[in-house]
Length: 303
Image (cartoon, rainbow, N blue to C red; front, top):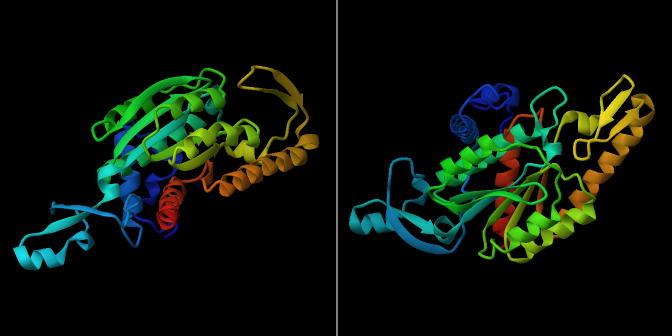
């Protein structure tokens, strides 16, 4: 992959710049098209080896999908469609718990997560896949079923999402398992403020139904590095508790704890063949997109 400095449209993937774009659809289209133009090949993240049917060629289709043998017989252009092209549901499981409102100096985690979700939804629509979203905190807040016509509804849901209440993964994810019995792609976006064992237990019902599960762990740079200098009180956004802290005495211990938390999540997700990506809200979105497409490629190889 090209670096963000050389990628066409790179100036639009800076999250601070994206936050000035009022339309999530425009933002998603700008980022995705610029990202795809910077790749060496088209990201057919839903493609499988199971041929389904032909359809007529339309402007914008990848010519590598044209069936040239059929063209030789009919003098018409037809594109090969595969099982995943006609049968893929992408559902975004979006954490709107209160901790997602945190921001140290950039944009709030929930806003960055909305950018990621909008881009993934745009990618799904571009592939003619069905897209939907579930927002949750300690319960399901909104549920938009996957549909080829629901991209704009997904964007509207993201635009209205507010991080206002404490969160808990177990209850809402167990409820979601009742809705996702048909195999699809589930993209879970959260800051995972729970113990790694509890996170895995909450996710297992979704994974065991046969879904392809992809996880994005969204953190603010201050949550990763704890770059504070002055003693002050820190508020737990979930509980509202105030905790007095002297940063110099805590910084090293905190970094070790957050690193251990991330390493534990990485190991547990890997053990269960769940693709995991840590996202820093100060970093451009191309990393999130590339990680997602890489995840799809790996999942395709093990089908």
